Length: 402
Image (tube, rainbow, N blue to C red; front, side):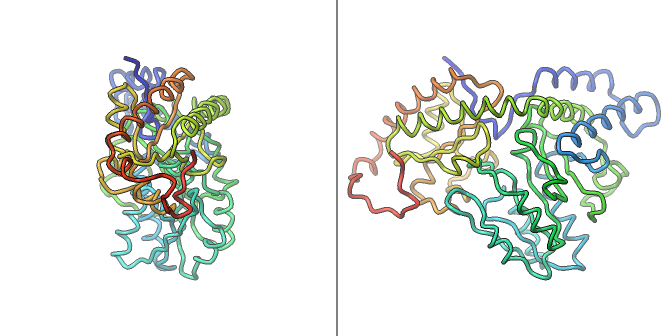
């Protein structure tokens, strides 16, 4: 049976070049990077080289990169650390309704600590209204935290414009770039980004490694204590193998970004067009044009997402119904609900995300298998059998494209 992996937004396989480098740092260059002897110095050299590789990808300075265990920790460090360091200036935070839970849950926690949070609504294609952002700013606003690319529907948000607004108002801007880092261009200076979160396992590096970009001069209170590593911003023995792997993956991503973006966009558009053409009562979620290369999210009426994923898996196709961090939840996606999509349709969402290992043959296989699965599931659906399509009354946002 053919196997097709289309869940790259959840995680990616480690590149062979990265795996080879990482293995050497487990078995040969295994020293503690804080040690002064030769073993430690060799490890430290690898860490600092990776810092330069990652900084170069986003046009930052190496000393502005701080290594973490992943994107979630980087988000927590950025948001909690920033507001705690600047609480004498205000207590107001602005974010959006479609952020990853690493941001949303952190904001909920801070609300319990006395901070106030404005959650910006989004349009039906998961984008924000810049005028609403401007109107939400208060005299005591100290942080804006907005993702670059939505992990569930792939929409690219206008971070450059957000950055300009934040700069004019002298407000710190944090960007969750876990889904965009290494996939589309990021220039932290041109975009006026003060803090940025990234994760290694989204770009073919190992799991358990990420980083926080912190612009020089931005105050940040540490969340952890007990060591001087990462200039006391993130104490604890460095994950040297993960760090060097992350660095190499970032360097390779930068070199291949333009060509890979063109290739994945072609495959993505073929997959979207094929699904909308072959499967009645289907719709694309998120922006059609301002969209991450390789990212597809569709809703299929009368389909329950979990059943769809199980049947795809039986055909060798790995996909998801949204964020991997909430895939076990029975609740509909908070992102789709914020976009105004009905419960019924939100429960039938399917996320197919492409990467380096995918080919046009994979797209053809999915377009062969998926319509058959949808037809079978609909034939067993009481809802599908009891409703006449032509007599449905739906809100305009839930009208599906045939």
